[in-house]
Image (cartoon, rainbow, N blue to C red; front, top):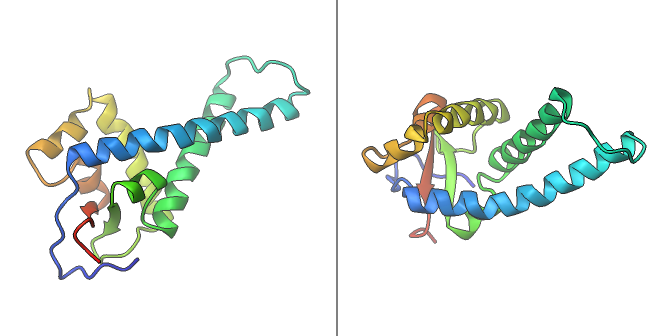
Length: 143
């Protein structure tokens, strides 16, 4: 969806962002379950011991989930339910490279005791919004 960057759409509230993340976490959990089954098939059905490679594989699956939805649709399923959307400075869906960068910054925001997210209470953006030059907008008032 192309959003006219000249139209000032409100930034999505922290509550809507967190609610969308909660919705998405259920979908991601199911996807990680399937990804683990696939990994088990390659491991001849043996239990997968905790390893950096397996952890990296699961993180990659999560990054692919978000970057695909954001770059193709501008929304994940949770974002669609809560009527919020990610856009770049030009009102378009961000490129997948920007989505990956945003996710890295989001992990950093969360690792700092969530300060990057709490920042939204005082400013219309989070740390990862600002650093990736993207915005999460509230589209509930648009047709």
